[in-house]
Each structure stands twice: as C-alpha cells, then as structure tokens.
Amino acid sequence: MNNISRRRFIQWLGSASALGALGAPSLALPNSKARIIVVGGGFGGATCANYLKRFDPSLDVTLIEQSKQFYTCPFSNAVLGGLYDMDFIRHDYAKLQSKHHIKLIQDKASTIDPVKQTVRTTAGRTLSYDRLVLSPGIDFRWNAIEGYDPAASLIMPHAWKAGEQTVLLRKQLHEMRDGGVVVIAPPANPFRCPPGPYERASMIAHYLKQHKPRSKVLILDAKDQFSKQTLFQDAWDEFYPDIIEWVPGSQGGRVTAVDPKHMTVTADDERIKTDVANIIPPQLAGDIAHRSGLTNDQGWCPVNQKTFESTIYKNVHVIGDASIAGKMPKSGFAASSQGKVCAAEIVAALHGDTVGTSSWVNTCYSLITPDYGISVAAVYRLSDEGIVGVKGAGGVGPRDAPRSTRRMEAIYAEGWYRSITADIFG
Ligand SMILES: Cc1cc2nc3c(=O)[nH]c(=O)nc-3n(C[C@H](O)[C@H](O)[C@H](O)COP(=O)(O)OP(=O)(O)OC[C@H]3O[C@@H](n4cnc5c(N)ncnc54)[C@H](O)[C@@H]3O)c2cc1C
Image (cartoon, rainbow, N blue to C red; front, top):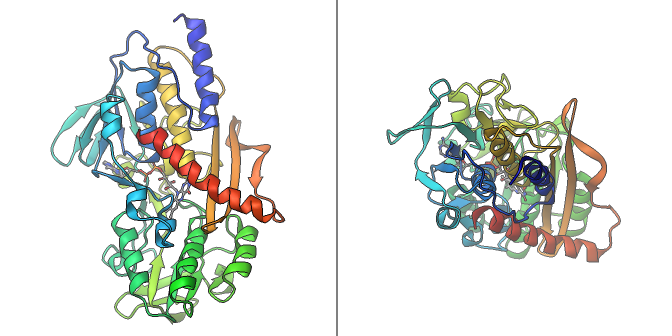
C-alpha cells in the first residue's frame, strides 16, 4: 500500500470510530514489530488492543488484565432489575487471543517506568514497550464520605465496578423486607456514567414494584441536576410515583457520612436509617495511573486530545474513564470510541504517518422499564478547546416522544449492547 492510499485509509479509521462497531480491513505495514502493551481489558483497553491488531496484524500486542473475566457495568442495572442474569454481562478474552492474536497476561500491572519504557506486574514480570496504552478505568476516593472505606463497601455496596459488587447489591435487594428503604447516593461530577445512578433507581424500582411494592428508593444526590433529568422524572412520575424520591444536593441530599454497623447515612446533618445503601463514592483515575505519576491535581490523566498520548509521559497513552477527554462523558461507548482512534494514531505514528480529522461518538441508553428506554447521543470533534460536541448532532430524546419511540429505545439499548460487546470481545 502506498503512502497516499495508506493516509486515506487512516483518515477513514477516524470516521469509522464515529460509526461505532464497524469491521475494518486489516493493514500490514512494514516496520511493524513494535511492542504495544495495553493495560486494562475493559471498554477502552480491549477495543484498543483489538483494533491495533485489525489495523496492523503484525504488531506485537500484549494485553495485561487483572481479571479472568470482564463483567460490564452497562446492563448491570438491568441485572439488578431482574431483566438479565450475570451471564449476560460476562465476557472473556478467548477470541481476542485466538482470533486477533493478542497476547493476554492475566496479572496486575503494578508500576510503570516511563524512562526505561517498562511495565512491572505483581507476579514479578517486567515487560518492555514501544508504546503503552492505559485504560484502567476508575478507582474510588475512599473516606471522602466519612466511614466509606473498602470494608464499608462490603456492607453498603457501590456496585460501580460490575461483578461481585453487583451480585452483593442484588442479594441485598432480594433479602430486603417489603416496606424497606433503598438509598442510592450518587456523587458530584465528574464520575463514571452520568445517567447510571438514575437508571439504577429505575431498575431497582422496577424490581421492587413487582416483588416488594411497599418499598422506597431514596436518591440522596450530591448534585442539583443530572443527565436526562426531565425524561427520567417524567417516567418516574408515570411508573414509580410512590417508590422513587430524589433529593437534590442543595436540599439536603448530599451524603457526608455513613455508618455501616447501624445502616445509617448522614445527609444535611440528618441520620437516615436504611435497609439497603448503594453508596457511589467520588472517583478518580484507576490506581496504576496515580502510582505512575500520570494524573493531575484532580486525579485524572491529562492527554493530547488528538492522540490520547499523556501530556506527562511520552509514548504512554491514556484512554477511557481515566483520561480527560474534553467534553466526552466517562462512558463505555466513549472509551471504545477513544480506543479506536488511539489505535489508529499509534499505528500511524509507528510508520511516520498522521491520522486525519478524527471524530468520536457516544450514545447512552437508559432503561426505565423493560420496554421503556430513553437516550442521549452526541458526536464529538477536535477544536482549539479540545474535544467538543458537534452542535446539532445528537441530543437528548424528545420529551413528548410517543410510546412506540420509548419501546424502540429499549430495543436499541439491547442492540447497542450486543453489538459493542461483540465488536470488542469477539
Ligand atoms: C451502573 C453502570 C452502568 C453503565 N452503563 C453504561 C452504558 O449503558 N453505556 C456506556 O457507554 N457506559 C456505561 N457505563 C460506563 C462504563 O462502564 C465505563 O465508562 C467504561 O467501563 C469505561 O471503560 P474503561 O476502559 O475506562 O474502564 P473499564 O471498562 O472499567 O476497564 C478497566 C479494566 O482495567 C483493569 N485494570 C485496572 N487496573 C489494572 C491494572 N493495574 N492491571 C491490570 N488490569 C487493570 C480492570 O480489571 C478492568 O477490566 C456504566 C457504568 C456503570 C457503573
């Protein structure tokens, strides 16, 4: 492939990321023995590893992921609502290895040496890289809410990383008495999945309405506004008027302390007794990003907005929730979109080429009931201020949409989930 057609191909990659789960023809370029390490096999990292190999099969791509299987946060709220079981949100790395020939190391990356360009793992391996991609997701600011530490999360689950925490929260909901109170405490911005706590309230209310109809969901919010607020509140008025109550931060909603022993949460100096407490604490970039000095004062990773290369260390790229990606939200779709653009940028850079104008995309569906969905969508482009939304592209679903639209959005939600996970993991 000559330079011109290669450049055109790489420009196409940029727009392909905006189209979501497209297949891409493979491109073997000369000089492709570069070693790329990707840390974190979630939405951002697994996509990036996969697309690096699709774009240039001769690259040496190693994925370091600490867990054997990946449970997605998307659709974990629907598991809590009783719509699906845990198997639906479980994925493994078999196809990334067998089909895309990515080397998988099941281990935890413990330290990075950006000067020697090596990654050390807890099992004692040291691996060298030419380019490193980090997509470690989030970690929690333990004790930012007084008393909320890792031990407290075993009694008052956050369930903001899917897996054992999802199972625990579901078990607590199943064991709760009819007439019980479920507190959900969402944090201030920025955090992973802005509409997530409100979809969770809807799905828990859906479960309670069928099985424990005298129960309540009390959302004690650190904020005064939230994503898709009008659509959520309209739907709550219709489906869960006696179940869901939302208390904004300025009206006493901000949770400042918890007492797991007595199952109380403190908001606005008032101690509230609860049966189930889902505390979603303030967040920051995944631990490895901090230990490697890749974060700013706010705990997130500043990156070049075009290439996602860290502005702190060369040849280290950070994507997904851990990165500061302009106006893009911390979502799985956004992380996957960034993974594709980052893969294209790395392949181009390794061959002395450049990528044209990339764009990114995000759509976020939320289920209110099994057949009532709402969505927000946006297309993003690069500007002088970083990554910004394209005016007029996307937006929140209309308030007066007919019931058939809501039904379709619920169907699209599942279609989106099936296609993005197939694109990433197999
Ligand atoms: C309840 C809920 C619902 C959501 N719903 C949606 C939705 O409908 N749509 C949507 O687009 N997004 C949704 N999200 C957001 C989405 O889950 C995240 O934005 C997305 O997972 C971010 O991708 P990531 O690659 O940054 O992190 P992750 O997907 O979390 O991947 C990080 C991976 O890195 C691994 N890892 C971390 N540190 C190390 C290390 N040191 N060594 C080895 N491995 C490591 C972890 O084990 C993990 O597998 C939801 C989130 C929540 C909590």
